[in-house]
Image (cartoon, rainbow, N blue to C red):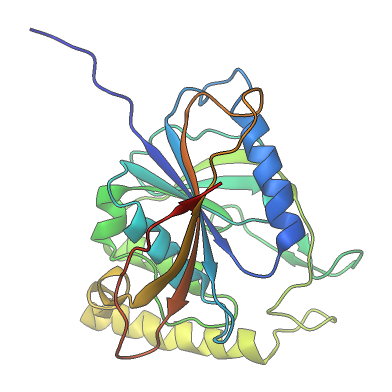
Length: 271
């Protein structure tokens, strides 16, 4: 007796803090995006916005890990920065770690209107919008939780993939960039104190990861957080709701440095 395999389910994870205008733009855009007739229209998706509470510096690697942990039952996960809107990209199931974003991210102005920008190299860029199947993300033990403030967590992840012999794939999607002031550079294009500190940490961690395999115990397996609130969005007009949308949740979490904290899923309230 034969049957059709059910479609792979995708978890879209949006790390977030203090960018309400960009989150609003992304939310409106992604709903329209998946109503278009294209190759990824029928993929079952769930959107999870993971917001880090105020207090500690923003830690996007740990927030991505939280999003994965809360949607671990999904087949694959797309970690999507809130400041990029997909115009054309391919969300189909990836055989390995896959970077979706390229066009729109080649050069990023350090702040709106600035002629000075951060230049990226196509062969090494692994940031902005990336996808993992569940097995590969668990294999590399997720992102590092040790980069606070800005930068280097994506280079750290690329190293984890290399050490596990996972070849990073490129799909080179087209995106609209929503500009904002960079948290890692000064206005003249030099790394600021936060960027420099994380750069030094990345170099130190690279040698430890390569020689001692420290990434196997630091990352998803050492994540410590608490869910403070969970909101489930249910009121979406029928003509704006993609037929493949499973759920839309906004989760606010508290991260912990060092000892303490655990995963506690709050009961969602709906609207």
